[in-house]
Length: 140
Image (cartoon, rainbow, N blue to C red; front, side, top):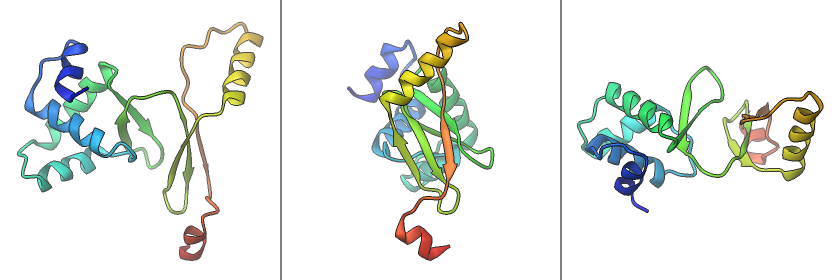
């Protein structure tokens, strides 16, 4: 499905900035991009979309459920196309981000919620540590 159809499906007007920002997030779907990263990619592709517009559009896309906002470290937000629920492992040395989904962990969270008579709506799990990647170990 293309970006324009996704925008229409969630009731947003199709605008050039919205389409371009969604396109960048789809193209870089393996990455977690900051608003600055997205703005820099727009500038590199000769788009005249300002940083304030990037922030505004990202907020609109997040509220519409198309984009997920993450805050991993240094209080800087990163964005990704909203997809199936997943959690993150973050290396504090090299910044590598590993996405994972563990059904046993998901079941345990449900069990804990039930134990405390709590109806779980959603959750975000981000684990910080040091990856054991050889390149990371050698460069730090």
